[in-house]
Image (cartoon, rainbow, N blue to C red; front, top):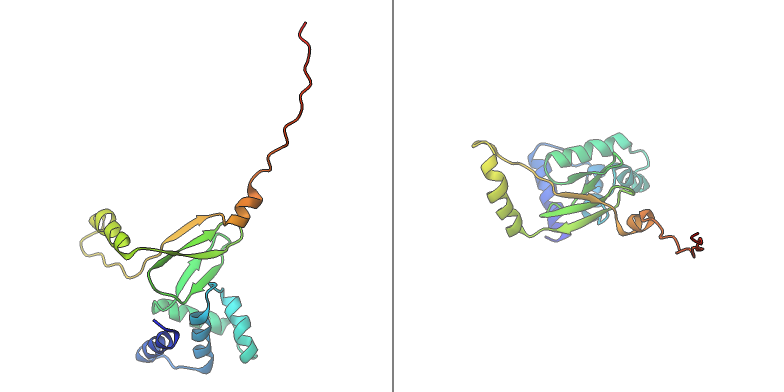
Length: 165
């Protein structure tokens, strides 16, 4: 789905749900839709403030919360207790660094996920349970943090021999 089509889809859904489309709301949608780096609310706020200096951080939080409730953005929680947002609602997961919070998209094969759901999850759910949303997150260390955390191998020491008596 191209960017204009994605924007139009979100705008139509917002109007259908009875929300007004303010210039600030439209810009928040654009920022989230165009972003490839999973911004936090503060990141969105800082970018929005360039165009609308009087906007509040609370406005950004309310709009992101509304978009999440409409399933038009994904909320991604990191180990640092921060929330980031993903405007790409296509089927994919995230690898999240436990140390620095870096988030990387992880491609997921739709057929593998559907098979996993059918064989492992569906049979364990109550009959009338309807899944409305899902998240696939992997937690670990990014390459940089892993390298930083890996212990440095000490150089081998020359051991002096202790004579045996």
